[in-house]
Length: 79
Image 1 (spheres, rainbow, N blue to C red):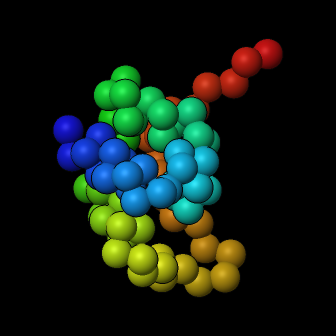
Image 2 (image 1 turned 180 degrees about the horizontal axis):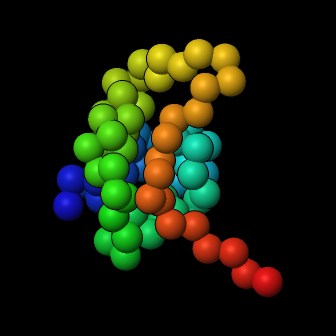
């Protein structure tokens, strides 16, 4: 899928999964699951756009305190 391809491309440019997850505001395990095709974000196009932006070296346009919504991204917690 396109997200898997973008993540592989970013990894090839030296981006780690941890760095990508930090920029997107998700957990590293979420990026890992996307890369392995285990999960797909509900807001596929938004995530794809953000990954494209990372690949160009541009910064996301965020206002102070603004969160980039990744609603529907599944995160798992172990208790």
